Length: 108
Image (spheres, rainbow, N blue to C red):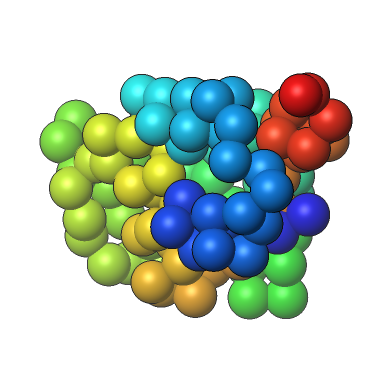
């Protein structure tokens, strides 16, 4: 399932406006979430970056206060939603992991 910024998610799926959805989206962001929350990413120690398996081979590198999305420098996101918005703006498609998709769709 493709991840969308919270505002788009709520518009497209108004029946899913549950506290758990907002809780997931508003959770504090940490780079390790890239591997837990989304599928298709791998961390490469030798390059100190995350690279996806898409045809585009998107690359994300995290620093102390900023991070790079395919070479564009941005401030570190405060929330998971802010990270998703940044990726959406840079046309990097994120797909929820099975565990997160289940949390967003199956819990009532």
